Length: 423
Image (cartoon, rainbow, N blue to C red; front, side, top):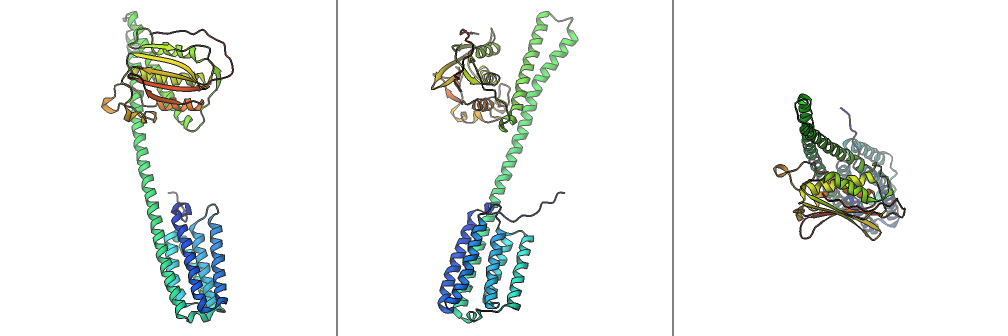
């Protein structure tokens, strides 16, 4: 099993609460030193106050460095208290009240190993103060007011440290709970995705295999019209399978920003007419019309725009009514291509989530068509990658209208006469 080393909590992990605690501690210590300065003399006051300022400034400077940790703050506290003990010759009151404060700071804010190192460092300083201290400020430790102020100060500092550490730990636990819930949701979404994709892939594969087996077994006995029908079904299911696999494979490339988009000037009208003719051949249940003049030059990737149109037209065919209109118009240096149908449209409650991955208006037993809910989010990301935007709006008096924009190019392509297609 791989060993994961324990690292001290970073300031970014415990948030601004500990920073505020440090500031409050320094202010309270300054106030306490100022109070006892009247009793012990301003010479001693200046020495201790300088120690506080130097230690506090060092803490603030190091706290702003990248990779800062709580270890720095605790070590600075130990050092400042150790210096005061050396100056006073192991001040009993300070030793008694500072030790719990430092132990609380060490073991609440540091991993056990790092806390033990700090405690060892604290012991070395305290021992040095006891054995080798010249105690230039030894006379201050006999003052009752001074001892009382120091005792109260460190009781307050200990309480503040415990409160800050407790709040930080609760915050970290809250973040961990959210991360666990996010991971659970991700695993659930992955399982749903695998189940849905498995079903969607199996359906066309089953059809292809079944009709191919029928043709292989009874080619000599089948009528030419039946053979043509079966081959048409196989081709149709193969196209569906290809589109499904293309949608699945394009997601990671889009999210990683590694999908190549060839922005070239071209006229979208011929491409649109061709796609409509393929998806709504003569005899289709829906009547598809194109109202788009030729001669307009847009900047985009024809292959990706074809994919967008296939997705939008596929939705119109599956979910729309019996009339589909594809039109284009110039609006503020952009070319707007709209796919409108006269179906029921998208309910208001579902209009925001239709552009999310694996989202469908019809789910579970209510689903009447195939698909994994990838078409619209992929179409939107492709359009955005080409400098446009894909939006939904309700059609009048009813139906759905999906419109996407493409930048109009200043380059000129060969002009083609406008055509009209009616299925």
